Image (cartoon, rainbow, N blue to C red; front, side):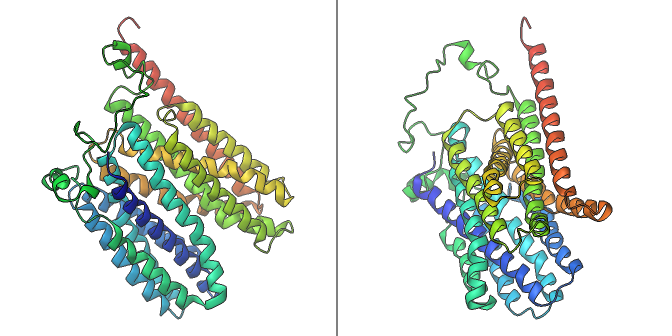
Length: 435
């Protein structure tokens, strides 16, 4: 089990990197409007940013299985800090657009490899705890970034805010651990084996039985001599790489749809509220804040509760609850009622992300490649679903179209997940002796 100091450095870096990103994105969007950006230019901004991130995550995630991961994350910090400073000098919308691919691609250097590190140093229930802390870090940063970007932009202008964001973006390069962890290809394996002798704060090996940093779990009632406890099927866990791969696909699908849902609400819900006399930003801002606060709280719960992996009911149940909440947004007009359903959306987002990253790392030999796909699908959903929602609004003339699309996508997702799990269980049963 990695030391608390080692994990704290990763969590702090994630908090600053994601928090500064959403400060920048908030300022860039408002700055583009102030510079007179057209609707097309505003629409191109997330496409260029997310599109470059998708490509970078796929390529760099794969390379992080061979290259030093902390070094790649530091490259991302330097690259994005430079891009943020470049945005300060952009005096027209086209200049802002040029920086969007750089801002997106820099994230590809940072996230897939850093997530793969966590999957290398922790497994099983420990992985769930480690990812819980990591998710709380970046989610808290994202929540504060949205708020701080708009708050300080109104008071000091865009340049000071972006300078501060550039420093916050660069800070993780100094905070992250300096000694590399072994990659999936083993390029840092020797360094990994020497960590205990060089720096006790960077002790990483989760497989060392003599590692005093990880006490024995006194609450584990499983008896290794009992065949029922050794059987992963009887314990409710998948029985091998094929089953892990199937759950990984379910997590990726959920992450794609739910992050697309969050982005769709972010882009389309303000206009829906304005059309029903609830514009001005206060109602929507509070709604969004409750969504991401609920997501963060769920990450805490997911890190403490180890019974959710490889179970269908919590995954599908949170998505059905989320679909119910999104559907209710069509008819709710009282701000308090709107805020009351926000936790359903936030918990759905949190469970989808937790599932995707956990399954990406659990049992995967190429962890960087898996987390690269996880991040690429997250980015794809974040611009594809809002785009489809906008097309539906143009075709139908109805502002309700995005929410019907989201409810439909969630129901299709639940059917897909249920079908895949049922097939998996039938396949398992056919292979059991006496089944």
